[in-house]
Amino acid sequence: MSCKGCDVKEEALAVDVDELIAEQLSFEIHLADEELVKKRVGKCEMCPFRSLHTCTKCGCFYKFRANLVNKECPVGNW
Image 1 (cartoon, helix red, strand yellow):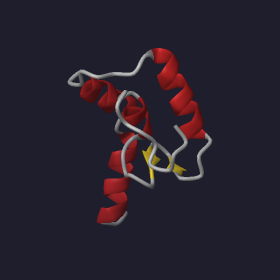
Image 2 (cartoon, one colour; image 1 turned 30 degrees about the horizontal axis):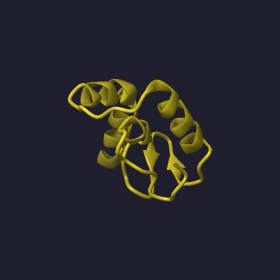
Image 3 (spheres, rainbow, N blue to C red; image 1 turned 90 degrees about the vertical axis):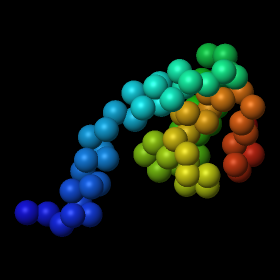
């Protein structure tokens, strides 16, 4: 038997983050084009401030933020 904190972490890991991001993006109006998203995500994936699906500087899912045309990287990478 694991502790409650561990159970919560395991549940969170089981969630499909890409599915959550796609769902939230369906509500957004100002989206970046596919080429810009690829460039941004590529830079995020090489960033030392990335932790799994999250930017540790702003706390967001980096793939979500990369899709929003009016957003910027919190450390200036894009």
